Image (cartoon, rainbow, N blue to C red; front, side, top):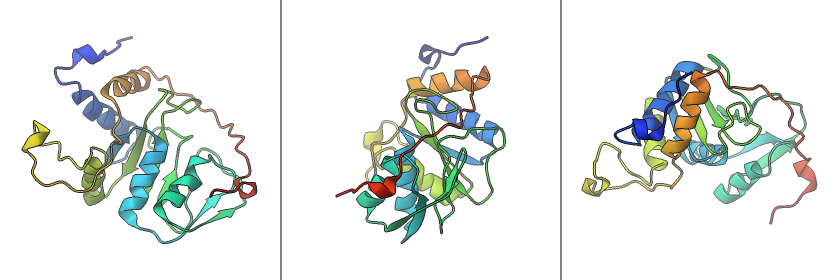
Length: 203
């Protein structure tokens, strides 16, 4: 069993590219952008797509409605059971935080992964976006890196920036993810006892 270490990379940020490529090969997604968590992955997707209203299941994690409060996107909580992942109604965006499987990618869709505690690929922190839209991929990649175009090295050579967010995944966590996928350390824990969010208030 070969274990990569961050010291194996001349440039630590090459580990991020390798992890994204590993996820692409594993899930079948043409493009992958890693983020520091699934919630920020979802947020970036909705910042790009600018949907005006959505539905979400009332049994999900609290950060999900918080995202839409922050973005000012109206949402409706709906009943219904789900397993592994669910679609944000009226959109092509998915909360796939509890799913990671071979060739899971759905053509034309945007699926957001989590690598937090109790998730299939448990790293402790991190997320990713699976997609097949190259223009959205380029925007997301820059948005997750403070608006930086990563072809500029050092970054100070870049003169113009889009608005960005400090949502990138750390290289050290990417190395953990590469090792776990290569060594088939992926679990399938479907338990998610989330509370009924229709019974709480967000002010």
